[in-house]
Length: 81
Image (cartoon, rainbow, N blue to C red; front, side, top):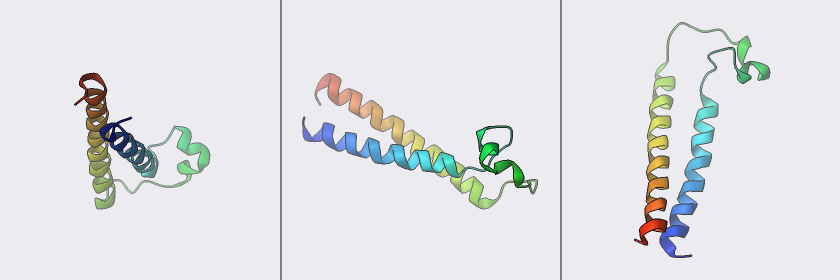
């Protein structure tokens, strides 16, 4: 296994864990599995806070980096870059 494959694989694993944590941090919208763990008890204040908007942005950015890492790993495997 070459160093680009190893590096991209490690980065992909780390980003996957971070992306999972960011998704789990989102506030429940109700009616899903999060209600099973007590998410339905909280009340909605009628709007999104700055922290939620920042979390949304971070989740999208990490998701884009995750997809880019997968595409880069595919290119390294396919073309041997």
